[in-house]
Image 1 (spheres, rainbow, N blue to C red):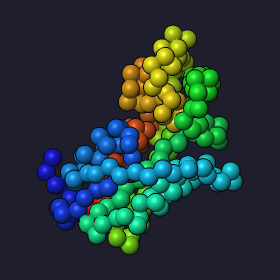
Image 2: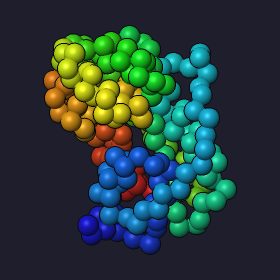
Image 3: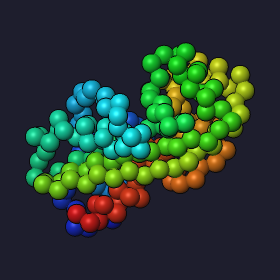
Image 4: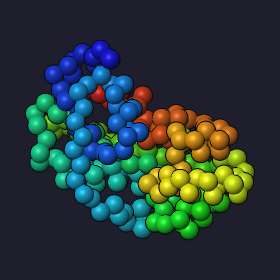
Length: 195
């Protein structure tokens, strides 16, 4: 794609994520992208309001990369949380937890919050976006098949909106689908235009 943010033509986007979904989304920005990650302990204070967890973790992921950031590099980190009944559903630790999460989400609406941290030189921009997702009532065959695929285990809330399960199970999304997928790319675009 052509550079759609002309004043950033000579900049490189440093994406601190191994997620293929996030890597796919940032291509829309038209900037050269390099993936650079550091291991981070993704724990947050238990007193932190659930609405702030995603931005807290996005900033946490940025910290170990700041000292390596070049003059013409823009750092972008993100974190997505699934919130049901005021409880954050993280990536499941095992099959039993993934199954429990899917059963909790079945036939109900929940909130997906994606937090973003963007750093360019001395400027840091942090924001989040929310979407409401409704999952249809899940039948046993779909749950078991999805668990057998191994796909739920690296995803918050044990599901991916963009995979086959999401195509079959999501009844509605109120808000940006891309926020649910992993990045509110429309808001990232606006933030980058403002740099």
